[in-house]
Image (tube, rainbow, N blue to C red; front, side):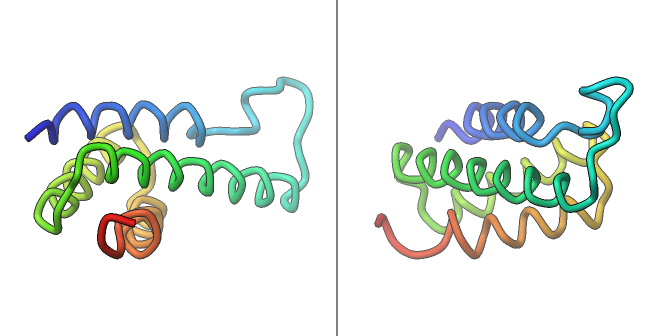
Length: 103
């Protein structure tokens, strides 16, 4: 199975879509908390769509999804994302993009 490749793609996509410090991307301006929240929610929805696409394209079964989720968790923690954020993102990933059969 292509678990490492899937994890690499999802990890890269997550880091691109949800940067560690979104305020640093625009020096001199500080977006409002509501703008950060709205931007983060939109980015996460996009990430979950990418993850669902990977799941369907690679025909991931239950064990494959679990392996991808665990490896992705390790990659995001290693990239510097805070553990509570990673936990929340992975839980939402498992309940949205990685839930159900091959739908």
